[in-house]
Image 1 (spheres, rainbow, N blue to C red):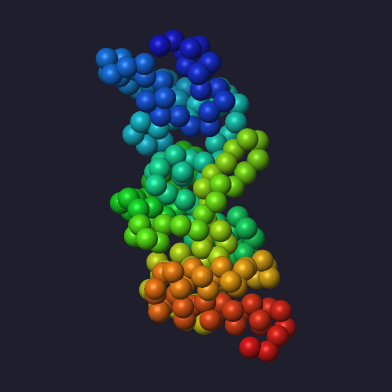
Image 2 (cartoon, rainbow, N blue to C red):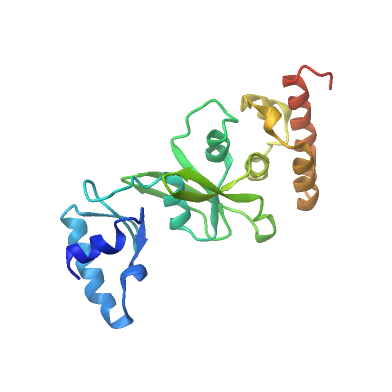
Length: 211
C-alpha cells in the first residue's frame, strides 16, 4: 500500500483498524510492516494494537477522546466522571477518559490522552446513548443517571451522603428521578437503592426543598 492510497481510505476516519484496510489475510503481514514503518516515520500514531490515527498534519479531524475510547474496546461506553463532566454535572476538568466495559479492565496511555476501562457485569451494561460530539463524530456515552450510578456501583462505600456531597454535583435538576429509581431497581442492588435515596435528597437540597 502506498501512502497516498492510505490517505484516500482513512482521511475522514478519526481512528482506524488494520482490518479496515486489509483486502485479505494474505496482505496482513505486509500491511502491518508498512504501518509500523509509517509509525516510526511519524506519519501515523499507534493507539493500541491494530488501532491507528493519522498524525498531524495529515488528519482532517482531531479524534475526540470519547471516539478513541469507544474504538479501543468495542463493548464499552464512556461513563463515571468523564460522562458527568461532559454533561456538566461536576465542576472539575476530567483529564482521563473513563469507560466501563464487559471485557477486562485496562489503563492505556497514548499520545492522545489517558484512558481507563472499568469492568462491569453484562447485566449492568446499559443506560448509554449515541451522543453527537460535533463535526460528524459520535460516541457511546452513559446517560447522566447511569454515569452517576456506575460511579456508585464501582466505588466502595459510595452509598454515603458525604461521598456524594463531595462530588459537588451540579445541575441536578437535569437528572430524571424515575430513571434513577428504575436503574437501581433493575440492578437489584441495595447499595444503589440507598444511593438513589441520597441523590434524591441532594436534588431536593439544590432545589431548596425540604427532604
